[in-house]
Image 1 (tube, helix red, strand yellow):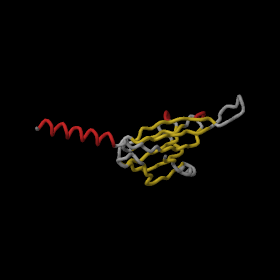
Image 2 (cartoon, rainbow, N blue to C red):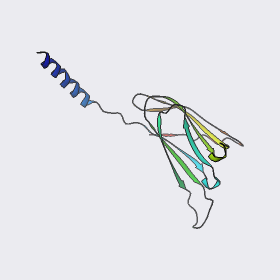
Image 3 (cartoon, rainbow, N blue to C red):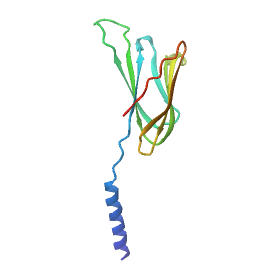
Length: 138
């Protein structure tokens, strides 16, 4: 009798677990102007390791043979778990001890379904702060 009840409970749990969908995590994309030919590039750090971070670079269109052409660095943040984190993007020459020109900071909150909400975003700069780009959350 006990075995039958245990088997029935196990089957019920298995059936109910099969009906649940795993939520699709939202991703956050931020694109910033960059020119790595100057030695500067964007570096990303987060206070809590809540995102997987991927970075890509695309060069602006230019005539063949032209050098020193800038482009855009794109960061894609995929949430790994729930929580709150501050993401700092710093434009610097990493080998020069962190000399930076610009910094963009975002505060994100991730819920249990891995949905992302931006709490705050601002930027700082040595000369003039660049506008903090609005992240694309999809």
